Length: 361
Image (cartoon, rainbow, N blue to C red; front, top):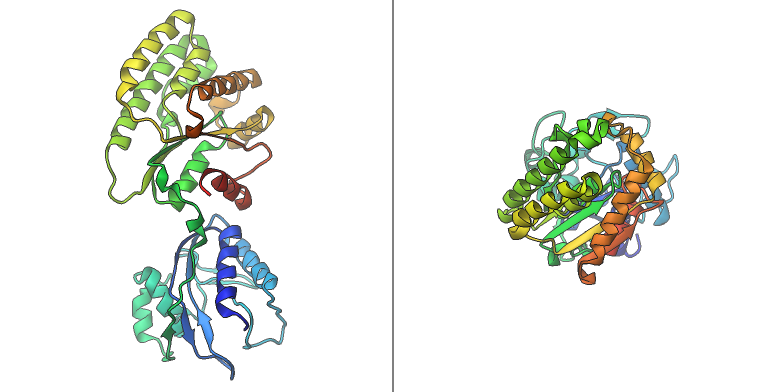
């Protein structure tokens, strides 16, 4: 009812803000009213990437309907409304509760669902029958006449433009969440993801137990591994990715080494670093996630890695000081310092979008 396109756009915008990244939006189709005499409906399907569970997705969808003037009642039945949001699939999940069934049971019988769905992923298999969407469309009993409209809905994700950065590096202290942020951004913006392979380093657990003994082999192995990884991943062009996002920047080797090594060892390490990294590409933008020490310690405790259990606040403070000193040497236009104290961009999508707006909007 009302301005139908505007309600559709507002619903898509709200789903982006509250549920997840919008991968694709189908064309908008007009179809006759179903189950009652009334004006024609507008329909589209939206493909969303979300970290929410199905019940949480449904809760957000119902709240969005309500915010756009939808009033539900037990005896409502089929009727015109401002907006109606159905959860069709959540990957290949089969799920049933008092208020939600997945996949939606009426999908095979709804041409106005199957046609726009086929636009987004024609080969998507129904979790129960195994039939791809395009086959269900060909065999559906619903022969309603659908008309593709000439007006497209705008993807709200397009407000962010990471294309001006070919290579973006996200840094932060231990437990700041740099890997989580880099991973989310790579998925939302089709970026090649480079993650530090610290878990594969055999010296890391030993360093936390005996730092003086294992500091030098630890830092040397990290430096060599980072060099090899960056040289391979950044210099090799990926035809199917738009840019590169990494959860570390090579200079972190110097920051950690200056804290952990003695004076003579660091002097040698510094010479080797400058020889090795001279030809490695530099990030177009360097993002530093600042987090207060207490929250870092909470995050470290929460993720429960045994070898990190003895990390002290003083060590984290020194790392933070090292990063800030390094940042001062960079051109201001290449640096984004984001204070994430009090934020949880993994569990709270509003926090995640706030970071994206600071970076790209």
